[in-house]
Image 1 (tube, rainbow, N blue to C red):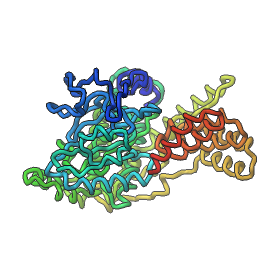
Image 2: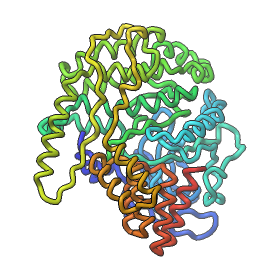
Image 3: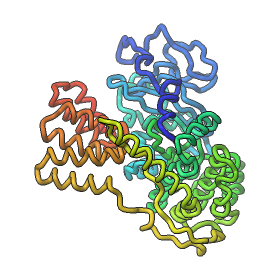
Image 4: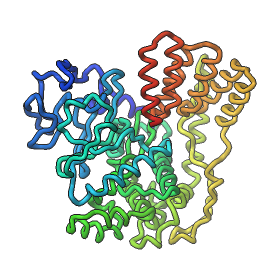
Length: 502
């Protein structure tokens, strides 16, 4: 809902400040923090013995603990699947999230299956699936080896003494925090005065979640925990669906659990064996959770009259029987967009056109369009009572884009070695959509071909801001840094690229 969230969150305590990172004083190969400082990172921090890694009372990590090449800074939160911590790379200060799940007799036997699913889902490189760099069993009594990469810290200790450690990309804000931010009436009103349609914006955000689920379901994978806490938002309002492979280890609580999973989940908890629940999660139950998420998000941020016409679609996605829901998440999202109607589209087009004309009248201004409007759809009166009530046309969701045309032209000019022309074409495309990471990457390549390494570096950094899990962008940034003589920084970029590819 606009750029306000970036400044608000980045000035709060949700984004790490590298200048406040826990500093180290290594005194030997087995030490990873200053022995004079040791305290627990639990909700009520308290002093610890210097040699301890995990608090024996609350199970939280100790501040400054080194895990591989990452140093733990603070606890981000605790949930049903363990605790999450902010950590930073000891050389580059790149932030990551480390999630630590204690062994549970009911689910520890599924850890290997979870690890395989994490590797599979990360290998898809989907832009709305949160990248996971490592997922491994870990025993805390390995301080002498803490400088080794996390994936080498696998152990064969008894299950009750191990943790499932997941290293993933850090994104500071959850969807719950995002919604709470815009739930404030003054912010909501300010958005509406700027001509931003909240319903249209929310649908674009939800489409990102739907896209992640569609890709996973097509590969035979399911999520099992589509809830606000597992949806992350960066400063560009890009969404990431996290914890594939981990959420199925325990059933979610509350209204998000699909009816068909409630009985099996309760039975598994009572029997101390989560394997039947792991196998019971389906794409239909993921759709149910997404439908509940939509309902709750709309209720928090919209007036009832603004989404009343979407209730039949939401009711279909959250039917008690899976067979009465939509045939897939793609159909659910398409029908939701269709029911949103033409009002949002026409209003946003008018606002966008007016704003661009205003900017064009200002000398020296570049026009950057807002987030692209929703695709045009027919306004026919389809009902949503079941799978056969849909008139679903995937092609309707992919209209031609002037941005794509400029990007294709830039590619042709680059191929023909007209690098100056390619730069101009990519800049035209970025005037229309400055949030497209591939455009910044292509612009960087064109600048690099012109030996304009400073501009190339800037472009690659813009690409990384928008897609931090792209190994090519990191590798190209390293190449530009090498060309500028900044070899140490370049090595860190190559290391990051290798990590993302591995």
